[in-house]
Amino acid sequence: MIGIIDYGLGNVLAFANVFKRQNINFKIAATPEDVLSVDKIILPGVGAFDHAMKLLNESGLREPLEIQVKQNAAPVLGICVGMQILGTSSDEGQAPGLDWVPGRVRKFSTSPDRPLRLPHMGWNDVRPTRADKLFESLEEDGRFYFLHSFYFDCASPAHSLAVSDYPDAFSCAVRNGNIYGVQFHPEKSHHFGAQLLKNFAEL
Image 1 (cartoon, rainbow, N blue to C red):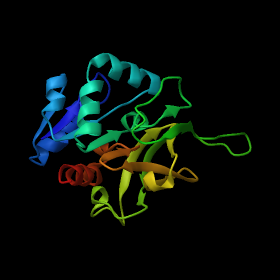
Image 2 (cartoon, helix red, strand yellow):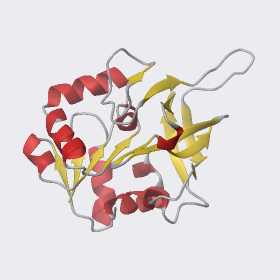
Image 3 (cartoon, helix red, strand yellow):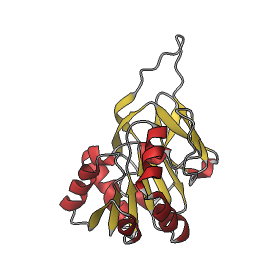
Image 4 (cartoon, rainbow, N blue to C red):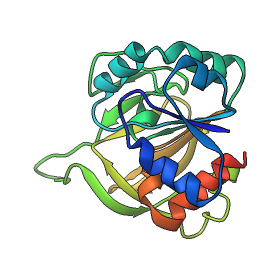
């Protein structure tokens, strides 16, 4: 059973629709009891880093999440800002992150000499850096939908699971044991995203 964490941030119903179409068991987890009753966890998120951490801390769901992820080793997949808050800190704010994947969230660099349109929005290729079940059947032609101005800078290269380019390579997926994160939106990425979420369900 997959729990989609509902802490007031992220398109929970979009994930529910993907899992319904694939006949994958899920529940929307909005209480501590819900979180503690599932085997795998989707941690969505949109918007700003500090706001996401504030809502998560105030939701009453952080403690059961810590129990499930850190003590029970339940697989978790953070998505977009849900991935960013897996890190230690962010250029976007002052709040500490969950620190489940050591690293800092940084803003893409832009300058008059090297202008870069922000946010990075639209479809982009994703290249796994090593074999992993999460990207099974997506190694060659995986394309996903992005919408972000910040990226995850892993403290250890070993935690980078996939990269994309904008225009330089950046980590768009991370893994630290049972903890996964993706910067893109699989729930908006058609069959590519459906395959990735199916892979997560089958971990």
